[in-house]
Image (cartoon, rainbow, N blue to C red; front, top):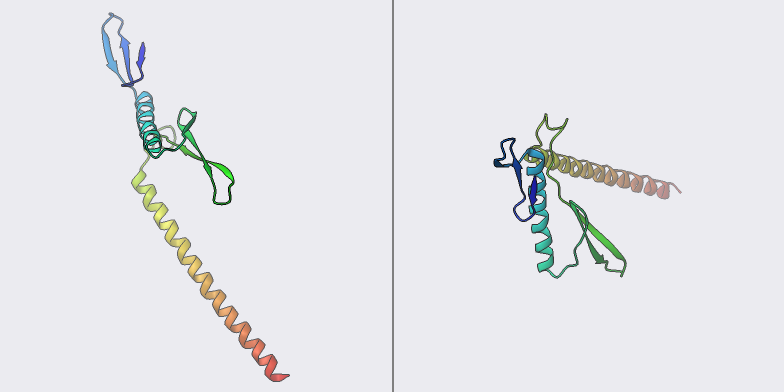
Length: 135
């Protein structure tokens, strides 16, 4: 069995000695992950960024913050299998919709809290003014 890195194809010899090209799901995901990770690396290199490969699916980019602090931006590329070892397929569209709904809910809650806070501030101001007028 051989593994060609450029095309990421596994050559498997059958029992009769014939060579077959076969790619199982695990290998297919690995091929996709490597392909997209390489695209990300190439894009960052075109921007003259330093790219450090720290894991098979992860890169780190050294950065300097606005106050001169050195940090790293870590980018992880993965091809998810879904829940329960693939019994429920990963659905990126559904997850994007869920995320969008959660963001909207947070914004609505934040607006409600701001309204309540404004009401409380107005009420406290009114109470303080009443106290001043009584004195």
